[in-house]
Image (cartoon, rainbow, N blue to C red):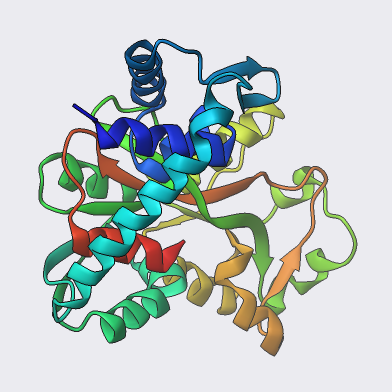
Length: 294
């Protein structure tokens, strides 16, 4: 019996040229992709790919012989599925999205609006929380997909897809400490001014502390906050110098109310990643939403 899923995996690997990229596109693990290829090769009795340092290349006596037929067959199946989907009014059901307030505001808000306009029948539930709590909600099946600040620890129950939004942490100052924005400011100078930092349990704070610790630098906060908006407000009032992703302060930089303090070395870039439960199917509505944010 023909196993269509094995051929879908074969086609995706051939198109991507990489087991890793194919796994990301199929929303399955890399070992599962590799196992599917081996299973199809055993079934056909041929080697479909040459494994090289550049990735996966179709073999001349295997993969290249069947690729065009597989591509045509999958295209016909996709067209049949699309005709069936067109008979439906739209995607339906509910998707529960977990993320922080800031990720919702700066990354997801416009994409959620776009998705709702395309699929109005889908109910959307937004669950705002810090990254650790968002992860726990996902693992407890209280949300369907999570968007989190990276880096996070590897979790065998979850699948991580990274780099949905790049975050570049920078030091910021208001008018009172504007002089620190002239040229490059050494970390020793920053140790002399009040620091406003995120709560020590946040991913952003742990990332900052780990980076500075590797440099032998310790910044002791005079104030710890739980939101970027509160940090910006306190920095504007002259309460101290903060650390925030540049992307979250662009409007304030543009209107001249906040100033970026440059350091050498610069703080490392981070990103927003997407998490899905490893052993749960992805609904059609959630597939549509993920396509909207890519």
